[in-house]
Amino acid sequence: MEFILGLAVILLAAGAVILWFRLWCYKRQIRHMIQQLLFLETEESNFLLTSVYAVGNTPELICHINYVLGQLRQEQRRLRKVNQNYRESITSISHDIRTPLTSVKGYVQMLLQSEVSEEKKVEYTRIVERRLEELQHILDQLFEYARIEAGELPLNPERINVGNLFTEIISMFYEDFSVKGWEPEIRISREALFIQVDRHAFSRILENLMKNALVHGNGNYRFSMESKEGNARICIANETEEIENKELERIFERFYTTDQSRSRRTTGLGLAIAKELTEQMGGKIQAYFGEGFFTVEVCFPLLKDGVQDRYGL
Image (cartoon, rainbow, N blue to C red; front, side):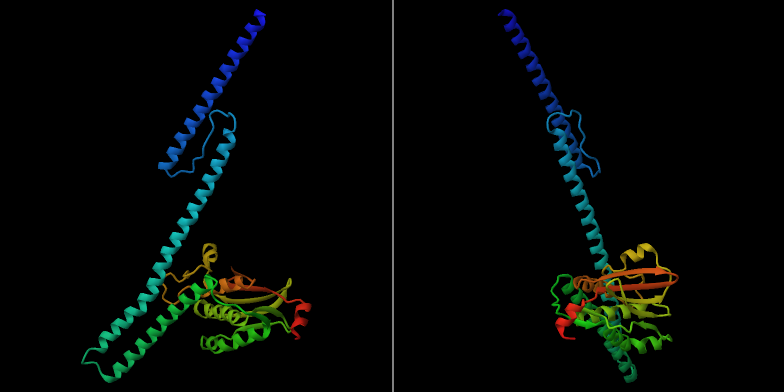
């Protein structure tokens, strides 16, 4: 009997020691985690929590905390990038607005001078009018982009013959390309290709791509439309100076322009608007550079025969 009691006492003592040790390990691990969290609270670091004693569920807890830390850091990086883009956007648009306003102010001051001839007054007045038109264009693009990005621009999809509409848009700009001394190379599939998009929005996409080619292209304009892998594929290409990959990655960002001096009076919203409208209507848009040519490619899914029959066309 005494042996059994002695054994029980020994077992209880051993159990108490084990429990005490585990409790001590828990305390050490918790204290260690608190110290690490306090460090992360005051220091910006990619440091993750570590374990000194893998007791109980502490490894799982550390794993979850590290996951949350990773998500928070990823969100912080995203917010920093958003803030940086926001600051760059404000700087860019401020420059674009200030330039015509400064010009208008200067010519208005000259108009107020008594010694200015009537002929000069007419000339200055026309310049002021052009600068105000530029300013209105900038503000209109800003308003349009804000509505598109917020999804507030109503889209009414309808069945569109891509070739016909593309030809119409090309004809609108044909004289502009001729003035630059270039006759575009045009290749449009004779096959009737139909897609379902908002006519006004799709026209806006093509117009913006044409304007971008006119402003930034150096010639050898090439326009094509074909059926490829179940899509209507439109390509607008032109010769230009070499574009680096980092520029291609940003080419569709709002306010971004490869003309860093912004001397070409462009807001950098044309391609951004084209991208937003394309994606909102289920299409894809991408840009690439090769062999001296900058190309923007737009693809929209072709309508199937059953859908075409439904429209009765």
